[in-house]
Image 1 (cartoon, rainbow, N blue to C red):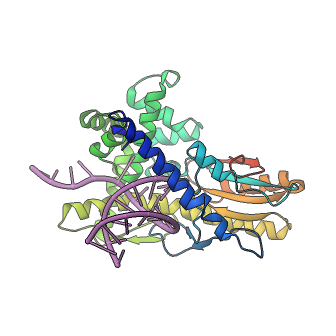
Image 2 (image 1 turned 45 degrees about the horizontal axis):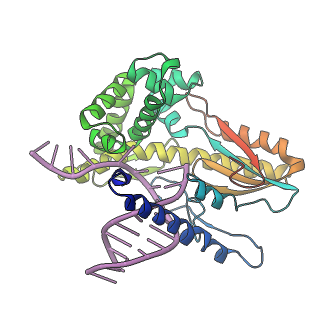
Image 3 (image 1 turned 30 degrees about the vertical axis):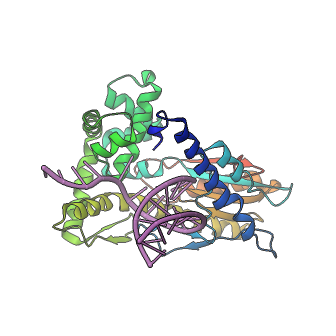
Length: 316
DNA sequence: TCAATCACG
DNA sequence: ACGTACGTGATTGAA
């Protein structure tokens, strides 16, 4: 709760101490213990049947939550390096895959147009909800639109949005209302998902994987509300998981065929990390980008950003 | 053993 | 009037 930081200097000090403590105890001190003496590498375990949406999860150690957001955290990520000077790390991540999926599934014309025109979706959303030209969107407006875009996927309320922003509850409600005015078919799609779940007891991803929602007709409004948010979120998060898994299979197949010496090392929900001999770099990049972008056809393009580096931080 | 906290998407 | 943003895993300290 950084909101109290201005009330007394000790608040900021405590928060900083906790953050340093977290980074040290969870990563800096712990990860060296996980280095396999034989391979001199850290090996994680990917679980295919843990997450309710169909995502992978990672443990022993979790390599899907390596820090990146703060400068100290970035120093941790920098420690993940290619095996020698002849190799680099390649990081390939889907751009806005969950919003593209909701645009495609809802068939909302305005959101489809934004992605088909390859617009900055958060700026485009801000322009619509605040009724200003795209070029006049302020940093603050884009930031608020971004928060709503993500919140929508989770089923945020005006209360939740007001806690997440500087907006009060009335302003947050106005923003959410303006959002649904801008993307009218989103609301329709979301209520269709909830109704489907009420009648069938489950929702499904693009590949047909189901999440059963036993509480969707609960008498308890709190429990029912959570299930309703799951009904909206699970097909989106789960379809993204389906799509990256298809991409991983295609990439693996093609790497075998060629064959490439490069290795697929990590999956972090919308990102794949590879270790690649520098000699293979250009052809591998092309393979990855094509396979990921063509893994599954939606009503909008899927786009993938690829970065290269001696370490995982630089590869972003 | 469990809840709180915080790291990630 | 009610409570109130999805999915994970690791660490910590109280019960």
